[in-house]
Amino acid sequence: MASIDFAYPILHDSMDITQHTEKYGPQNRYRDNFENTDRAERIRLFSAINSAIHKQGSGLAQIEYYDKSSLKKIDTLLHISEIVHLKDVAALIDAFKIIALACLVIWLSLVLLCYKKYISPPNLKQQTLSTLGIVAISALIIIAIGPVTVFYAFHDWIFPANHKWFFYYQESLMTILMKAPFLFGYIAILITLLTIPIFIIINIVTSKFLINGDKA
Image (cartoon, rainbow, N blue to C red; front, side):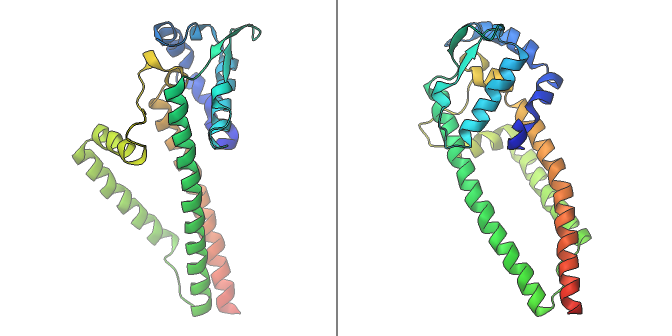
């Protein structure tokens, strides 16, 4: 998803981010004239942020925004608190990469164990039902506690206590650009939709591998 900027060009239009920018751009306390940017410029800015956070936050302070002519520089996009937060996000992404690698090693080890011991792993239906069960239980717990409470607690746990992570539209062009937190919800849905076919393909390939191993 990062390689296609999380489909931001499509979401930009479907979420009316142009109208959102025109409303909140003039209200920003730290930067001026963000409402004078156009669609292409906002897409470029999102892409620049996306690229930077996948490079340990390198280049965030140098991101600048231009007017609709693309010739006149208006200002740098991010102030210091936003840069610090995005560098925290970059560190979190790096941590997730390590976790993902560890999960891959564990999964491959289990597949090889099943292969050598002729053990049949849970089939696609069993895995789907168990996954849906976990999701349902998690959803009920979140609803019981309160989604906003869980959202705030999650951020308090993963980000340093003295680092600001919540920004009003009036104090952050980044949140205007992303129409946060709504954009993140759409991205989560897209990632889920992408995960489903990957999940199915992995199961099919793994099953064929193990079946061939049994025949051998």
